[in-house]
Image (cartoon, rainbow, N blue to C red):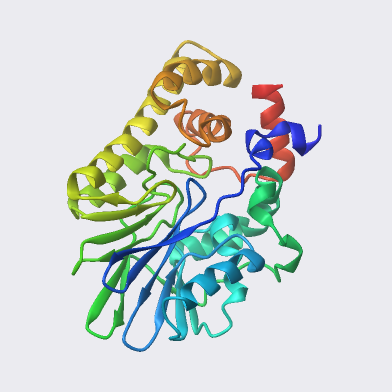
Amino acid sequence: MSTSVSFASASDTREQKPQVRELAPNVYGYISDFDPNCGFIVGDEHVVLIDTRPTPRMARDFLADIRKVTDKPIKFIVLTHYHAVRVMGASAFSEVEAIIASKGTLEWVHERGQADFDSEVGRFPRLFAGVEEIPGLTEPTMSFEREMSLWLGRRELRLMCLGRGHSGGDTIAWLADCGVLFSGDVVENRCGVYAGDAYIQDWAGTLDAVAALKPRVLVPGRGAVLQGEAACAEAVALTKAFLSTLLDSVRAGIAAGDSLRGCFERAEQAMKPRFGNWPVFQHVLPFDVSRAYDELRGIEHPVIWTAERDRELWQVLRG
């Protein structure tokens, strides 16, 4: 079965042009309609990036847009987590001194980085323009256990692992002085929540820890920037609701003796009324149900996705 007919994302061909959005003085989001969001912070001496684009070619567009704002050197790249769509553009930033990630993310790269890359290129053809330029996996050169701070002059950028969720190494980037939070894919704004590599039952607690920070501006993994404490809290709550509906429906399916496909049909029926019109919902749901089905049956760590496993799952659930 060819990829072109296998994945919902393969028929997604509409180009999205990210826009630079100023979120606070010297703090910027690089925001798409519903592709992965990035960001950057301009310090006294240098710039820190929050994630990169999927390929060097696409990252050069990001660099050109940063250069419209500042000519300061880009010294650090912070990875909120490791999925190819967020990290494979790193090689376009030649001045970078360190690529920083959590220890959980570093382990993730070593365990499943190549399989993930091969899988994602198959799932999201539009997002990998110029894929042939990618020199290899993006390897973090600096890692931390739970928390570290980067200082941009007197401004502190706190990198925190608040718990497992979207991946085993999620990092949020928090600027307490202006209340701006870059959540990575821990929080989405009315976009399908990808849980194929997740620790779904832990994720709610991680979201509670995000909510406790009371961000005033939140850059979600996908979707528009949230402005104001109430809007930020609502996005956290909606992400949580998506995941709890997923778990509840798959748990009910397992209790009823449903197969994976039966659980998928049950989850789709439960989730479509509230979440079905969210971008990428149709794409993420098969992977989400598969992971929930595994996790609720005692498989603690997500099974590594390969291009072949992707196709097999799609055949079982959508064939």
